[in-house]
Image (cartoon, rainbow, N blue to C red; front, side):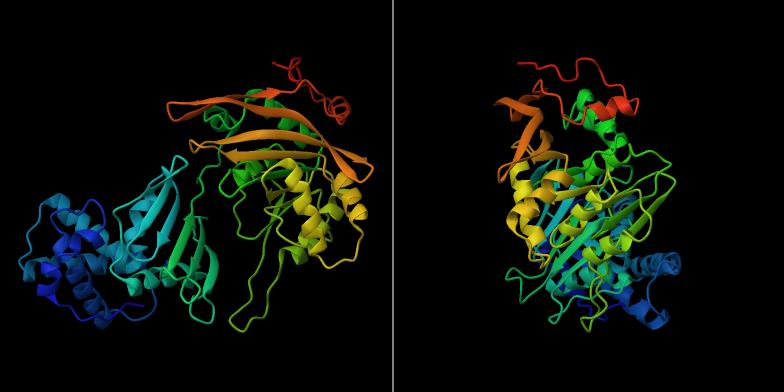
Length: 448
């Protein structure tokens, strides 16, 4: 688990490129970072047996601190108390944690971490990309951190399997891609999710939606309207799906099916399923589609698919059409119309020989509402369309916008606009009354 690398004390202390490869916040101690780390690693190799795991992590941390104090005395390395603690924290995170990425993972303002090779690390903060000063020592250093991330879940990244999707214990989603697929060296992308799911008040405060739309979505969820949440990468689809699914009554049996588990439902009766990738021999894969078919045999009231990407879209439509009203999923797309086109394409990917009109009839009868989000120019996420699927007219699926985001400008680096009602009532509005769901009187009033 520990790498036995020869320590060259003088070289570490005189490296001119030290500023380029050292983490932020370590001024005054950069010259000895790797010398101290490698010296402690050699001592651990001789004293510690076994693999690093959650049970022995505290023991390792104590051993590292003991060796660290001994080394500073032996080498006469003098630091202020603050720098001494920073150096110790860095060594511990690099040996048993996630190395230079540790401070980024702990920063709640960062929502995504993008490592483009060992010397370029970007983050997304408040919806905008920025480059950091953090870097790895070299490519093997970055590879060790990637291996440390994927090893606990039984995955590996090598030339025979150069791509991997994984999930950290915190729930963060990880994608790693290495050469020969990557020409920039090892690539690592970590998408962070809030440890406490966003509430409706949070999304209203940051402008993603407004109070009227929250009331409408709550009513749709309780009235068992079949919904699809669409948008581009990082537009907030999973966050909104978490919010909408929180409105499901607690007396219903809900089954969630995900590629990488991200949804956090607090209802009493929630069953969570997660796809399984193939093993090293390429066997044992369990796909989203297989899980959807299996979920239909588990007596669900609703099925929530974290993201439909291929043939499982057909099974999701079948579920919506066969007594599992109120089911939900997310789709990558550019608009509500494109969402339906993508679903048609994904149904064709299921390998079922159906005419296009039959597929469109399935789509139009199964899906009742499309909620579309966009990541705006200023980095904010906003619901831009709430669109009802009204059925077929000839060979065309008829759509009707219920709410639209009206952007009126771009001022001081911020998008200016407002989410407004179009003044049209959805055709399923009578279901609110049947279920004793009361909405604000002016919710459908046009603001034009």
